[in-house]
Length: 410
Image (tube, rainbow, N blue to C red; front, side):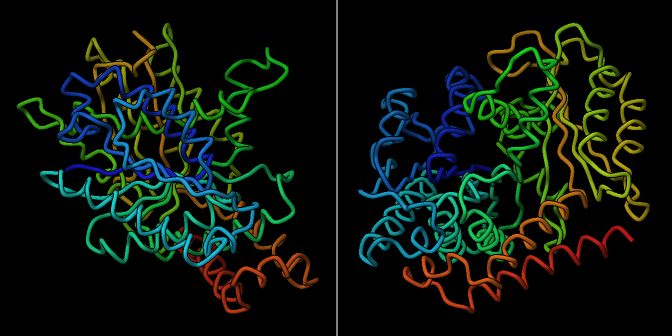
């Protein structure tokens, strides 16, 4: 059940770099098998509109672990503009990056014994991550309509990183809703909040690499093989991303999932679960309800999680305010191994599909509509090929997501 990972833009490649740093120590083990192709190189494609991020990635991961043809770079950035990212500086350059990306993915797919789908990592606000990322997602769905397609999307700080960020987020959210089967949404404000509280505010500032590392830990917690899903011979098939999709995002209308990750060397499973739920409650309203959830417990070397599972499940059901219509809202996976780099540490990764996402979506809608009504900054989008129809469709699509979540939790 092989997966091809596609990293787009600075954000997507930096998060991917952190994830592969955790995967590379597993290269010669069964646990690492799903992430490497027949040439013993990472089954990943790296795309950016300029080469500097990919050069750093190549140095960090060592080029012997990467397919040279899977490092795809343009010659000019995308100016934090969705339209420039989607359409390209010139049509020729935009088409070249798209064609090279699809061809690189095709080469990886042809090496898979059982191809299941693709995971695309990107930001919602950057010109490359949001615009080029949206176009790549659209093209991949067009060329590979049957396999699964998952987006790992990072939302910007609400305080603002760019005056165009709300337009970019609106348009990109519309595209991922149309063309992907699931979206793992990470909000920079939520990630920062988690890190500040996990470190007990002992540090004055949290760095971007630390935030990327946290997101990487969340992804590793979900995507690395687990004992629960690995078949009896002990050879992992890499089914975790797609079992996650089936468990958490089975309905096309409500496909946005959020992830948190907590670990501790001396804490018991009850304590880690209680801390996870405490943080969840602080970041969600009492009116928010979870449609479904997956809990991944790693570091279960003594096989004692099963004893704590009933209590942990009660905490998750109550703390996440699970909907009544789902009789089995929480799924559990376990693995005896800790995450690479965190020896002997227990960890819980909590992935929920909950109505709390509507708060962020409504924020994007409000800010984007205010600017759109005032016709602010729109000339930058018209200049690079966007039309009124793109915005109208995007507003309608994101509003429909909010309506569908409200309907699902009634």
